[in-house]
Image (cartoon, rainbow, N blue to C red; front, top):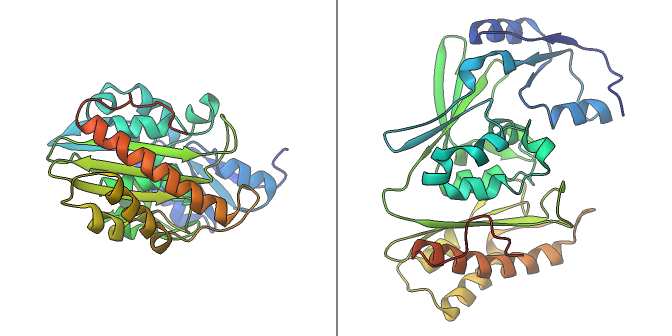
Length: 295
């Protein structure tokens, strides 16, 4: 399917030029990877007078780790995340998530920043960023500010960004303690498919846990009730079952073309049990290798 609507195309080389274009254009869209935007333009779910391609702003293409904080620039693709030695060493959970995103072709173009800016409920990045208490760094004319990811998502396809703002990076703090994690994504088949549901877990020393769900609510869900039930308690089957019983209080899945709400609810229980055991195993150095399929 081709794009049939007309729009002006711009490719600025600096942030200043991009801000000027955003200010002057009535209804502009930012393009980084374009894997969501181009599809939306093709099927008519989005309509823009201008597309501003920021791939020419090379300062946005970086992965750095300084002061125990990971910084992922707006042009960093999921393939970049998978190949990064920094990610592999310090944040293997991000690598595990990135490997589940669509296909090689999509991962070569799609960006993590673009993923959270599209803010579709089935996005893969949201639960992981929620676990790490990430911050979204935003720039505008004459201003720079940051938002915790917990305040970024406002609803399905809705974020806290304003018209003349551009997300420049995501910053993720490394937990002070040693930790193990697990990301499990449910799809209809292997390959280029959107998530029916996803579960992300961090296991930390002293029986501390962080739990998040994706594709089972309008926004990523940080499961505070489950965390409260788990924290401070040694993991066993009884504790896992207690946490599983709380899942219906945390998530609100829907029925759509990919799955029924009942199936999503059931599989979140299954995925949670497998994910928390894998996360604890990895914390203790005996779990499955990151990237191992658990479902």
